[in-house]
Image 1 (cartoon, rainbow, N blue to C red):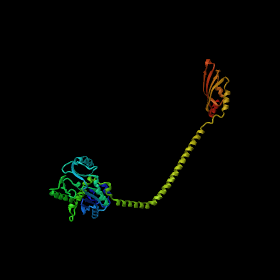
Image 2: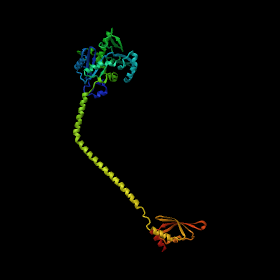
Image 3: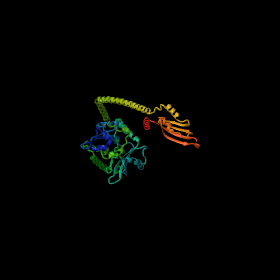
Length: 435
């Protein structure tokens, strides 16, 4: 079971990637003369300070104190690290604003900040948090920290020399919620106290400072279990303020507003875990290839054989289809040729008999000879022509149609005659009737 604060400390995408060490994180607070830190661990259903330490800073080699403290806390490169402290020329203020989504807050602050700060750094960076104001619906207390981009150079140098990267940088007062006590951090602001959303001179506010520190300790102990011995709350006040925010419900909501560090300073997470994952994947792939390689090769060969057989069948199918089309075409051509009539074999004989049977007084002006009939257009000066008697002697035709028209002054008559071929059955019937 994951600790409840872990979900608030790290967003869903990063949490899903976690493999080891998902119950620990460290908070490091730096100051000009010392660096302090705590390792927060989730044990028995509650967050607690597992290890803590303070190291003095040597002005000639400030990175040595960072290295020594990280080593003392057992903070490896895989452990999540939050950094807090005050950067050069940073400006902090608290505003009372309308409650809006955190993703829209940055644009609203860019418009509102010039009204509260007379002079802003060029190309300034900004981080912020907002908390709902109790009993004041629709409003929120907004904490804003503004700094110049060059202010990150010292922090980048310390992390680079320690060969570390950080989860995020968070100014301590960004963790102040409405109703929290007075905050006095002499290592960052020795002359001022932040109280009731405003800065106040520290002179004469000793009682408020002590009361505020006691209230803060009570609030932090409600979220984190503190060591009972060898632990000075004042040395770790800034780190514990950020730790309380990190394990609260507000962190995941405000995380996008706190984001300040460039990518080169962010922690590269789970590098070793990803390497192990890649190695395991390669081993599993090799095992799968070894166990399934024989079957895969046999399947490939069978597939290759079936593909070749299929291609061969397709080729044969195309050849048979081509042959069938060619045969069908030839068959149709043969049927067409077979259906063509050979024509009249005794054409000349029949033509001669027709010419012989017609009287000399008849002149043929038009002749059309078909396989089954003969059409004649004739002219004659004779009036009494007996065509049935003329064609009775010719057994090839019979008169199918006869028309005769008298011409001018009844001198010449025009005869339209249609003869039909006599089939053997018809000829036999005619001969039988004659008998």
